[in-house]
Image (cartoon, helix red, strand yellow):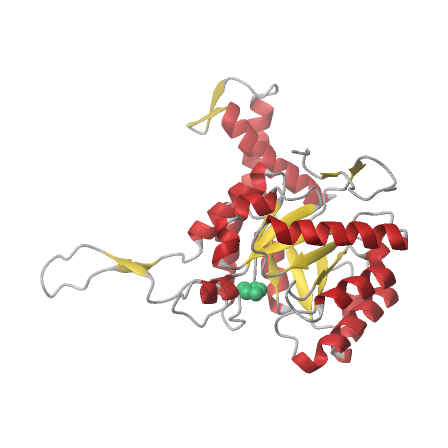
Length: 336
Ligand code: GLV
Ligand code: MG
């Protein structure tokens, strides 16, 4: 069953309403924090209101002996903070891990009413979403959670990429999907140790000219295929697509380029793992004022969205009107 964008139909018996309108939220950056570190937790109130989403990370990058502390830290942090308009997410451990059951049961019981989205790693097929969907329905019913907790899948295994359409349509509880380039690289046996971004050896070379002439070559985007596949699966099911992590904090230019490629291809945001990436995401995933001004001229020139007009020598028609509306709508949400 297909539902219109941002409409969620609770599955739980006794759920409060058959359909709920969820607000369209700005989610330009999903900012990761490690909740087992007290110093980090202490700074979370400063993040509320200044980032679109705060995510308490319980999975990879949290040491084995800190898994329980991270879960407890996340609960404490959510209880203690007024997040205002900032979204509250957690990345739980994978479904085949020893921590996931406690992650879900303890977190939903303690702070389910304040939790917007659960990010589920290593999703391989619709069955993973069905399982989490049912468990959340049971926990929401048990704890009287009025607002449905949404599911965000990380696309980070070859099997998951193969099943991306089934994952996207597995439940009306699906919020969206993120590319997980680090795990995906490992799953595919790609020869890189990087977390996202390009690789200097992945390039095309210009045809050979004179035998000694230097040959121009350009780095290519390792993630183009997967992002395009993910964006199509998400758009076809009314979900949002996101670029995931960019691990080289010392290279803001490459980070911005990767984020921007994903934005142009249809992504709504990216993960920020370091505070320096927050402003990059904010800049990239907010539409450019000059583009918005041009888009507004298209809308104004075609009030009913049909026909064909010329603006600055460029042909506009019903299709570019729709493109322009995407940009103007996003600008409105950013300005709100
Ligand atoms: C994120 O989880 C990744 O594996 O890139
Ligand atoms: Mg991963």
